[in-house]
Length: 224
Ligand SMILES: [Zn+2]
Image (cartoon, rainbow, N blue to C red; front, top):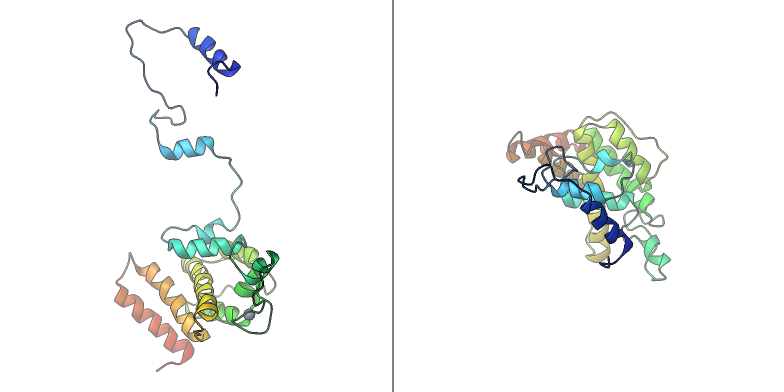
């Protein structure tokens, strides 16, 4: 802002009218965004940012203890920001449009993470393994699913949601770029292992988490 701008001139005029309590009192630095008058970067950020209403899926992604990379991929999927075929083709880049997980439909964020038979099998199996009885309505997209998850599932369910989105995305990329494929059971096992380890990290040992995963996997898949 130029030194001779009206705003600066007005500021100096107002400053000149301020009466000091005492000629002997010292100047103090006062940060009026905090009751304590002390400065914090959080209060500075809150003072200058635009405040929007909280989204209904907030709790499903930004939860305490979640793995940042899993939260980031899930957040990107809800905002439809992942480089999925339908988004890339909108930029006139020719890429394969089909879903590499089921080979029976076009790839979009809603198909990849919700409607695809491969993905829905992973979601169903992992929820069944952890005895989560709530089931999402059959017709919804990823954003609505995230809102439903935030309002209907417990902490383990929230971890499973993020873990499933992340590992489905990884599996999609493995197939596309490394020509390696895993089965529904294998990906489900990784989803469950990630979520269970995270849940038990502060409560039990990793060894106990492994036992729990194997126990649930044996029950559901009859693996011996
Ligand atoms: Zn598919």
